[in-house]
Amino acid sequence: MCGIVGYIGGQQAYPILIDGLKKLEYRGYDSAGVALLDNGELHMVKSVGRLCELEDKIGIGCPYGMVGIGHTRWATHGRPSDTNAHPHSDCTNHFVVIHNGIIENYQALREWLTSLGHSFRSETDTEVLAHLVEHYYRGDLKSAIRQVMEQVHGSYALVVMSRHEADRLVCARKDSPLVIGLGEGENFIASDIPALLKYTRQTYILDDGELAEVTKNDVKIENGNGASVEKPIFNVEWDAVSAEKDGFDHFMLKEIHEQPKAIRDTLRSRLNDTGVVLDEIKLTHDQVKSLRKVVMVACGTAYHAGLVGKYVFEKMLRLPVEVDVASEFRYRDPLLGEDTLVVVISQSGETADTLAALRLAKEKGSPVVAVTNVVGSSVSREADQIIYTWAGPEIAVASTKAYTTQLVVLYLLALHLGNLTGVVSLSEAASLVEELKLLPSHVESILKKEHELLEFARFISRWEDTFFIGRGLDYAVALEGSLKLKEISYIHAEAYAAGELKHGTLALITDNIPVLALATQPALHEKMWSNIKEVKARDAYVMGIAMAGDKGTHKEVDAIFEIPATIPLLAPILTVIPLQLIAYHASVLRGCDVDKPRNLAKSVTVE
Ligand code: M6R
Image 1 (tube, rainbow, N blue to C red):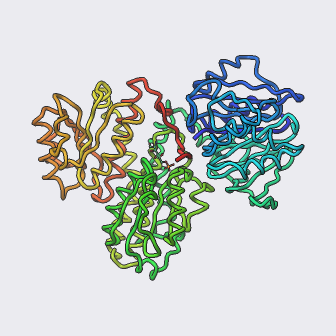
Image 2 (image 1 turned 90 degrees about the horizontal axis):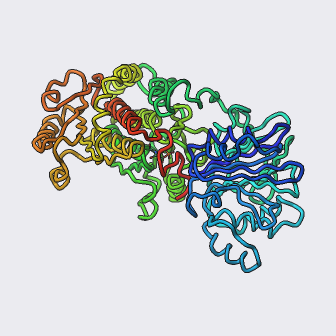
Image 3 (image 1 turned 30 degrees about the horizontal axis):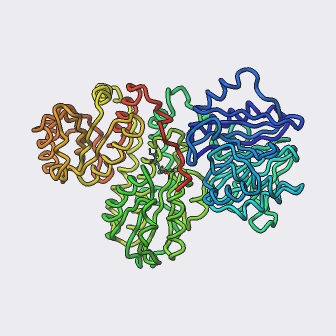
């Protein structure tokens, strides 16, 4: 959480910093700040609120300097305020720091530094970094930061700028992402690639424990032992346009509409006429045969993708599958080992809990397959095997195209492993492959009917409570639909396994309350219709989502949205699309900030 940027070169740094921060605002947006050095003078401006408030505060008198750092914050230690906004400086204002992560031992360090005479201005954990650099500085910024890294516990991506050494920025990382962008006579630092795309596609992705000294003509990287590191340049293939709104009102809407392409790209080159070609997966037939269990670990939307994955894997592998929320996983001493395949799912590849789960699984000897969208992310670098979702950059906080492409990858992986073990026959595989190929055009046809959802979105936008019900795979999708609505429209949305309602929650059903009933699973239709009758008997207003031609569900509900007919196992990829659109339009109608919902950030890089 938090976005950091740095620039050193021959141009004025301020517009470049602001531009970079705009691309990173999805990481945090409760306050922002910049600091620049100009002829040895430090100019620092900070403001609570969105980046535009910082820009307003600066007005036309923008600070000069060809070296600078900037930060957009998601508060962890200390409420959002001008003072707690980054950058933070030491007592002498000679060292300025921006930081993403948490310094866990900051309290002890703060007390110690205070006893040495340092005085603190903010409530943040980050400020100790500036004072520590001041404490250790003996004429060499890099060595001082090295000493700081030895003393702090926790996670950090940090950049330090100093009036003593105005010709360089020093940055370092541990458990938080950091990328260096390489230019001609200029270099850039950022938390994430979109901030760099306008300027360069050539990057170094820092690894944990690494420190880099960045001047305008050079980048020197050292590992945790101080030895110099020769890193390969990572060439970013995303173009700048894919990280822009491209005519859509919001990134979320653009990303919903990008799903046909994202699914196509994720399938491309991984399918042939009869089955799946998953060269990324190196598990042998014997290894797969010896598996006793699969565990999927993820957070938020990615966790919901795992819930769909459970159904798919159990069907295609006939192995028990557990799905865990990553923040709970490692605290229950999970049973892991060589016979347990661990699948971690993370769009960003930087979610702290998911990364910690991955590390634990590796420690216990489990083979780990990662499903991620970001090439070069921590998850992609640490997993044994990676399958990328080729969704392109996902900027909106609410995850959409990442979810559908995660599902695609889980189907492909299950098919591949099911083929290896012989649980899935060649003919079954071939018919599933045919249906998978149709998904992009099915999604296109749903998107063409977006207007049909507007009335229901308007209805729902006037309520403070809603319910999503479904059975089997539909229940897994109901959880995702309700999360989408909650996070961007702030409407309370409960997702329930439809058969479970009568065990308590039915008490909340009142006159006209909106209920979204997902009914795409023919084997469960009759049970589902009974559950719809139960809520209708309590006067709920029921919107059904069903496959085209499903007359039975049609009869039970007040309104219906039809998705194209597909095999029930693949329905989640289609069912979720109207739910994303309903959440989006309800959020717009309520005047919410769709792409940057309150209290949230895109990447949760703290535990
Ligand atoms: O980057 P990740 O997939 O690991 O992120 C996991 C969650 O933080 C993320 O899915 C979150 O729940 C989204 N805001 C949901 O829309």
